[in-house]
Amino acid sequence: MEVKKLWESPRDRLDPWARKTFYQISGLHREAPGQVRMENQAKKSWDDIKDHVYPRAILSHYTEVGLQEGRLTLDGEWIFSQVLEQVDPSIIKGAVAYGLTIGDLPEDPDLFLKLMGDFWGTAYIDSARKAMWEDLQTWDAFQGLSFSEELGPGFFGMGTNSLMKFDRLLDLSQIDVMLLDKGAMMPAKSVVGLFLLTQGEPLEFPNRCLFCKGNEKGCAFCGENQE
Image (spheres, one colour):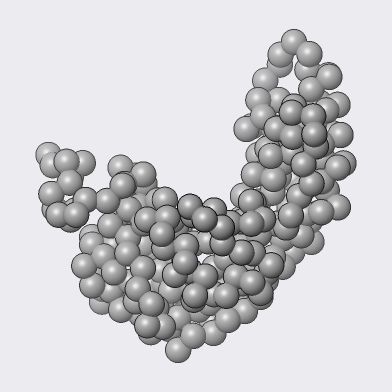
């Protein structure tokens, strides 16, 4: 059984998280020559994009899933992630797939302000993911269940070609997101991912597997797993 739901959040809810993240990735949390000038440019960049940030997501909850040899089957569509070879299928009680965007942000012709705008966009999409995850914990359908670490294209051995499968499952056009060639999305600050649902302790994956590129022979033959 599949249940789709739209999620959205006001931008100002994300502002405190986004500001903290922005200062970290931009380096403005460290004292440096020209600090005042850089902070003024960061403020100008934020003023330019703030009214364009519109966090929203399309989520799909699957109560019936299949898992075999790293292939997770959702509504007839399978998604492969190398790390799933290490998961016992019997503990999986469902899955949640999502597509998330903060909308199409304007780009400043000035290169430095464009860079600042990109940092702000990254900060807001990360903050939107955090807010979405917080809200998911409160939904009635997920009471008594735990969310795994997040899986998504480019992480834990999941190929970027799985983007098309997420699109077929979710219909990303419902949040005005479209796929481009070579595994990109438009708006650029958009992401997809999924969580596995279990009872009891949340499912975690080994840190060494985070940037796994996949091994056609499987996890048992991965050098990272050799003692």
